[in-house]
Length: 312
Image 1 (tube, rainbow, N blue to C red):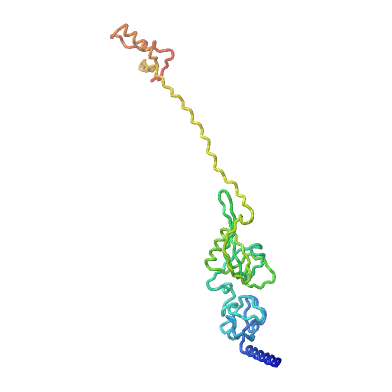
Image 2 (image 1 turned 180 degrees about the vertical axis):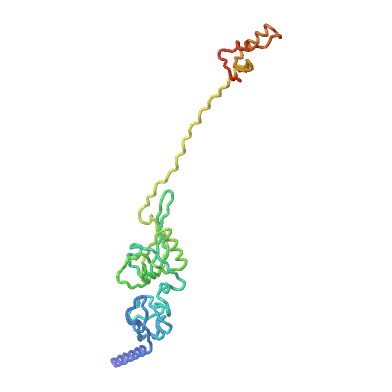
C-alpha cells in the first residue's frame, strides 16, 4: 500500500508541474548577449516558467517585447537568463551610458591607477568605497590623513567599457561612478584638494560603517614633528651716541672797521682792545674836542692778525 501511495503522489506532482510549465512563459536569451546587443527574434526565445510569480520587468512573449520598437541590452545577459526591463533600453533608445543611470542619479568619473583602482579588478556593477587622502601643512609641520568620503557606490563603467563581462583584469585609468548630485559635488571638490582611492566591496554587502579619520598616529609609530621654529632674536640695541659737549661760542674779539680811500671802501677786522686803547688815548689828549680816528690812524691800530673782509 505504501508503494502505491508514493507512485500516485509522484504522478500527481508531475502533472501539476506540467500544468505550470504549460500555463506560464517568459522571454529569455537564446545565447549569451554582451552589452550593447540589439535584441532580435533570433537571439531571444520563449521558455516555460513554472513559478507562480515572474521577475519584475519580465516579458511573457516576443510580441510584448518588440511591440514598441527595438531594444538594446545595457548589461551582459547569459543564455536562458530572463530578459528584464532593467537590463535593456527603452523602445528605440540607444545603448548610451545615460540609459544606465537610475532615476535622480548622476555619473562622474574618477581617475585611478593600478593601485587606486584595485589592480584592475573593479568591474562595472561592482560597489566601491571612495577614500580621500590629503595633507595639511603649517609653518612647523605637515600632517597626512584619510577620510571615508563615500560608501557603497555603484560602478557603471571602467574606462569606456560599460559591460561587466571581462575574463581578465585590466588596469584602468578612469572609473565612472553612479552618485547623487550632492555626492558628485563632494567628489569634484575632493579631486582638487587631495587624492582619491577606491576600495572594492564584497558583492551584496551594503553595510555602511561609521566614518573615522585615519592619521599618521594610527599607523603604529609616533610622528616625528619638525622642530619648532624659534622666533628671531631681537636685534642688539646699539648704545646711544655720546652727546658732544656744548662749546660756548666765544664772543668776537674784533670789530669791523670800514676805511674809504679814493671812493673805495675796505673792511678790516680790528681787535677791540686796540680800538679801545686808541679811543682812550684820544680822550686823554683832546677831551671832548678829540677828532675821530682817521684812516691813517685806524691803520696803525690794526693788529697783525687783521685782515680785510670785503672790498667794494
